[in-house]
Picture 1 (cartoon, one colour):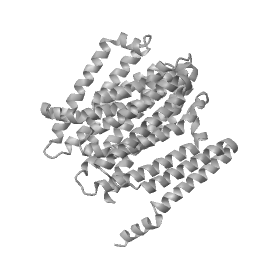
Picture 2 (cartoon, one colour):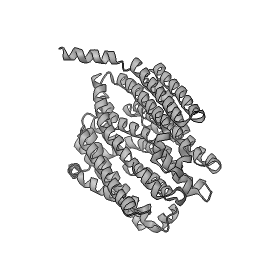
Picture 3 (cartoon, helix red, strand yellow):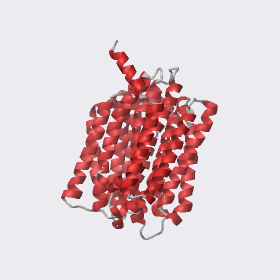
Picture 4 (spheres, one colour):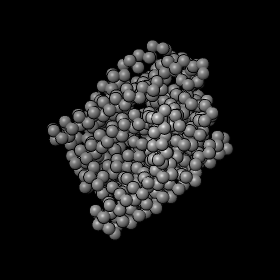
Amino acid sequence: MANLKSLAKDTAIYGLSSIVGRFLNYLLVPLYTQTMSAESGGYGVITHMYALTALILVLLTFGMETTFFRFANKGGEDPRRVFSTALIGVSSASVLFAVAVMLFITPVSQFLGYADHPTYVSAMALTVAIDAVRAIPFVYLRQQKKALKFAALQLLNIAINITLNLVYYLLLGGHDPGYAFYINLVSSAVITLCLYRELMGIRAGFDRQLMRRMLAYSWPIVILGIAGILNQVADKILFPFLYSGSDMQMQLGIYGGTVKIAMIMAMITQAFRYAYEPFVFGKSRDKDNDEVQASAMKYFLIFTLLAFLCVVGFIDIIKYLIAPDYWEGLRVVPIVMAAEIMMGIYFNLSFWYKLEDKTFWGAVFSGIGCTVLIAINVIFVPRYGYIACAWAGFSGYAVAMTLSYLVSLRYHPIAYPVRSILLYVGLTLLFFAGMTYGRTCLPQWASIAVNALLIMAFVACILRRDLPLSSILRRKSGKSGQ
């Protein structure tokens, strides 16, 4: 229980920076959608460019975040030497990438469809290179359990970004989507300077033999990461090449805007990952590690399902985060949220092969899931548009999650509370069906009221089965009486 409390504490800190930060970033969604109409396609440009940079970031970091945790916690390895080697390796790759893009900016911009706006591409290339470099100091903060500094810098980054966006798009009345990229570059550069002390860890030098061993461990993680990020952004990258309608940028903007509403699930899974990864690797030699993973899986799923019901139940209120001309895309929100839940489950399941040093399996699972996603996009997007993108992501995560679980039963079986998990999943599906039906046959105010009652019933089930208040209060009173 003490271990779970430690995990919960770190998750709360990381979650605060993640959830508050993402919420503040949500302020940019109504800002962008109000200043850039769906018809203009401006938000489609932003959606497309950020999808590309997410993929490039995975390539430039080449799995060094997870690899750093693994080697820093290995006996006989010097964590400072591991950090320095990873930082020099990622920094070298990032500089080469930025220089290559600048040298070939014209053909690169033409290929991406931004021949008239090459500065969009150059700004984002520099930004992603900087972000790749600073990813290693950030992972070092997590390994050193400096959650507060991590959270403070993340929030500062978002504060700078939002402030500059408000100045340009609101006070100055700007409409150019390119300024979102220029502002991002500025905020990334400032935060990297704030990591000066951690960046000085580069003085520990570069160990070639160590890097070879780290790369041998990380290359399957890179494939896993590529497949994983493609599961999140391939639809947005491929959409301009698959959808032939003249309203392509508008449709992509609508999809990108409504998907943002579903990203509350990404906040939860990201906060969980930030705390859980160093926690599990640090406990890898403890006898109760499997038991802790099983309990963490259950509680992760309980609270993500609760978040799912909250978003679906109050979607008629939450939708005001985006402009009305984007509302037609709200139908993808439940699908994308369900996909994010499965991604979180898959992340939890992934530790069996990471701890067993069998990261090859991760590449296999994610590769197959990614193949499913791309195939569904290629086959169905030309006919059904962005709704096919949402179902493609759902299917890709479902396949990867299922395969990881089935193979883990042979190599590293963990006694997950499957019966309890299925109970909550079934209850969620039942309540979701009720909410969906209520929206079609009840007045909006009545539908929201019924949804609130259903959410309270779900919370009551949690409190009765897994967080009984009476036992918690007895435990607290017992401690106070000692």
